[in-house]
View: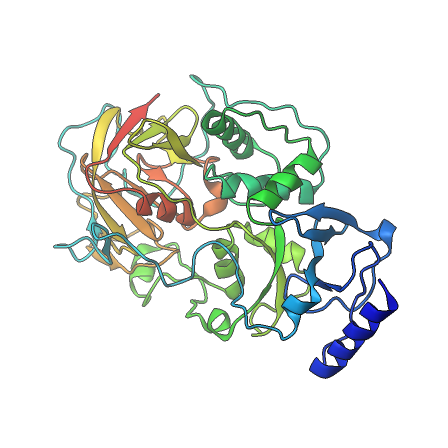
Length: 434
């Protein structure tokens, strides 16, 4: 940078009382290095300490050796005077959903909450507990093999980058935890089906480049707000349904649990990325992943593949729009076969437990109205199907999706169920295949 430019920047820095300016040592003049939070980088990185990449606008960005963005390059005249910018965190705004006219909030109209009805016809070997919140151990796959993709030794940040990219593309890997597994493999195959391209999970540089084009790097900083810390939260979620019914809501149990779900993360991984952090203190800056905005589109047909434990959403033109790992039935409590339709959609539904038509839970022998909440039996979303008692819904245990089985319904993570619900209207067909 020339002496004139340095002087100009020094003067501007003094004028606006900003922290020390990181001068550009890569050959351009009158540019600043700005952190992802919008502040000036307070030091000048050495050339060997960073990797230089370019974003969609041709702007240079500096990454550390883990692929995290340190700063991006900005012309000084665009930074001074500094404009107010709303922070972009991607994903969905907590407690502020926007829904289509056909989507109903709260309990299913006409009922105090979702209540299981008797089956119109019995299924062989199917006990009367298809809508329970309990899960069965995973059964061996017998009809379909989950795809195996050869993967070398990837670091957890590299696997996280892959998971974030897939999530942004609408092919959910389930919870983002920095670990390869069947849900990631299935998402890669679905992405290749949508795009017609091949995705090599071992190409870390290629994944970072794809992330850049899809909205930025995998990790970002987030400042815990007063609203985040305030909740409301409950101390714990009891197993007994009578105790559940006594709670005002089946809310999150902690700020960390809420934030993990907000950013599609495994809670243990969120805590691992932020060792020693007290998530209850507003103003605390934490490291999270950036799953980006929810997938949009109009879904005309859904296929629930019981063998793959995966849900596929197709548009009017027959093209695959999105795919989600799912828990779908079990050998003892199977999901139906054939085609049904979506009848109604409810956000934040309650749940009515009736021991005469539901499974027997503990010593409970009376009807219980279980309040709504993300830790409720059906999570945050319920898509009722034309087959009585069956639906597509969320779950209070997202880390188990695709790894355990359900009592006949289709379970997705709360965020995947919400995303799908926003693309679906009553009348959409759902086909169960083996």
